[in-house]
Length: 178
Length: 178
Image 1 (cartoon, chains in turn purple, cyan):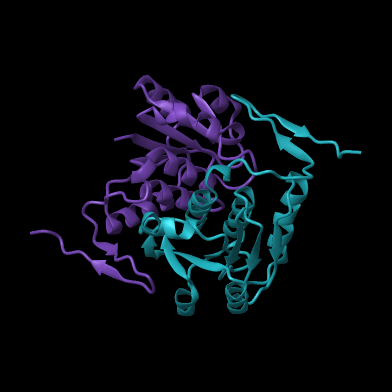
Image 2: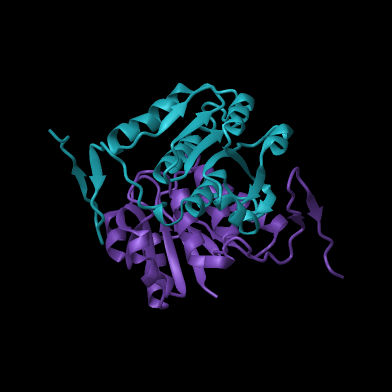
């Protein structure tokens, strides 16, 4: 079982709220253990944890984390740091090597990323070398990384779950086990 | 070669600007031919077309399209309509059937999607049945649909291209052929 966490860099409170929420919720849905946020935005933390409370699992969000020490600690613990950037090596060209790693910190930048991050990362990886979206890049990267488990994660202690439907919407309340 | 286009539903000008731009740019990067926008927002059209002008390819954006007639025309032309929704059947369970189709309209909703869309779609597909992001759902769906070509699309007539780097950033200007 892989241990994967996200480091969200350069989030600007207010302006990046929706994008960072999409990053956090996608990471949770695809089986990451949590997200380190290198800014101070308790609103983001609350909204992602609220989803986790209702939909299950143990996804964590750590607010206002120093990115430099976060990367350093991860590397000291034997983890691999993958920085997603359109300027990096294209995913198909480095995927095999990265898939062999078990403990990965995925660095997801906003508009400006300090040059040092490129240097500290073990891999600078592009999800295609075209301009698009850090949300999409992370989603595709995690999907590749998690393989066949990506879209069928388990979320223990959920209060609700979707009952998949050909047409329409069905959400089921789950009673806690006694 | 598959023909894939996006129908972006329920975009609210201003509020959804960044999210819809991420949807359009991701669709372009992963090889979709274009995006129909069921709202009137010429700002979005311009910003996505500007990227296409600089980075190449022929991605189109059609503004203020009626979603009902867009879906109907697509079906009349023999196309398949896939509506992405967390309430649908999970992608791993329907993927094989969808991958056999060559002409696909991917419907990407914002917060509220009219019930009729669920009925008109040939497939209602969840990219995991967890709440996350329409950008991520579309990105992963297109990546699966395009297979090994997804991240290595060609973009003819680009003015610039990234030279993939292990570290750092390198963008090359391309001189038009004489």
